[in-house]
Length: 114
Image (tube, rainbow, N blue to C red):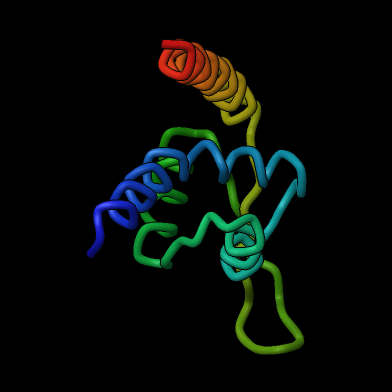
């Protein structure tokens, strides 16, 4: 795997929970295939092998909840939604993201000015 691909993959992995919280706050609820499609549409390509553990970690930490909904197109679907605890964690993620983005931008500006 080329270094650039590995770097992108590691960054995506680090941002997955943040992106899941963002997505579920915006959509209010979604099932796994919808989540995968939204992430792919945003170029946050993710495989189900990393999605489900992240969803379960967030659920086990009280940040997400789910309900089963009957489907006309197959088996019932598990719809995930964000909880108040999840919204609080999302605020923490957003603050950390803003700090990190600002730090990287400062370093980038310093580097290009010298």
